Image 1 (cartoon, rainbow, N blue to C red):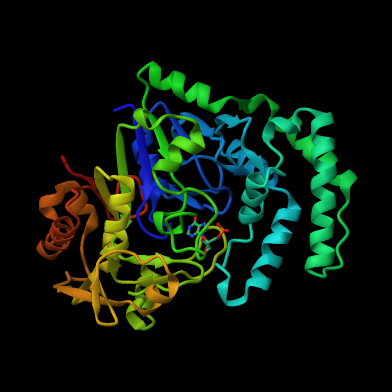
Image 2: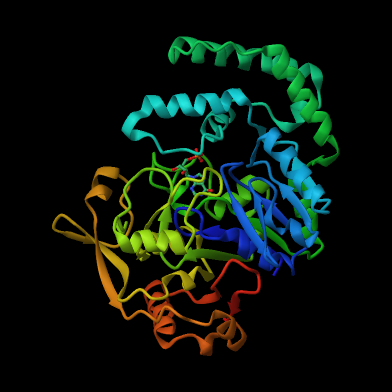
Length: 428
Ligand code: IMP
């Protein structure tokens, strides 16, 4: 199965990092195709927690890891991650696309200023400069990794870009900040020198790997509902988070994708703003947040949580053509009774089962729930992992089966804890 995409089916934070790490064992390389350091992928191995914002999660298996052209690279964070991994004894076999765009400190500053201006329309961004960097890319002002390696091009491009940003910061936002062009140029050149050995044509290398029959995992960041086109605009991110983004962001044809795996949390969570129909603003929500440790990996913000909403999941299945689902954090629901699953929305006098495009309609959507019996709080997950699917509490099996019946896609992996080993793999 050479080309495999791992995609989030909700609002990100579905534990894709753990699943990528798990599947990376049997892969040859892992490539990130979208987003930047706004992502936070957590992998727990033998009690030790590793957090990545940029480097693909498969790095702990010593596999080749790639940052595709669709990624926006924050030099400071990348160098930090490389240093931390080095300290842990990992020497990542990292490859960075010469076409990936670079995040500068002025992008991060602009991110915050844009949010301030937007008021109630702000997305509650991670302030990692993601939106401004992708905007500059689209407007063709951006600086690519390849530019860092050529002093003359870099200087010419930064000259225009820094002047533009200076005007925006002072004249549009009225901020009294002076950008130091010389320092920005020097820092960019320094970063270019630090990563020059990793820079390559990622599309060429990934296509070659696929030609040789190697297994390539395309690791999606964020989730489908945050996608720039198909997410809840404007409350999403600025990249193509869906499976199709793998083709654009890594430079491969759709013909090269063989399997699409959707990762879904057993409930709903999101950070940032925007409507969330199944949100639980009560003690059940607090309990899920505490048990599930629902705090942003990147920002530390408490995540909003709610019952599992299958409307966005079904929408993701359609957009991504998902072959298999992975359900994560099933253990977090232990001891809650009854459990609820949202299967449709009531919107005024209409019943709908897909995501509306306009936010005002979506704000009016009320969840229609199906109730299921929960399972006891004190479950011995270690014993269950050893026993496999059959060892699950009957109510947990019923929860899985009802989801499968509604979404019509098999659940092939069940994750019941952050550790690699806390996983039940089903033969589907
Ligand atoms: P940005 O990507 O930092 O511009 O943030 C835009 C929106 O996407 C905000 O609501 C963020 O909270 C959300 N977001 C960005 N990255 C992630 C992620 O990795 N997980 C969950 N939410 C994210």
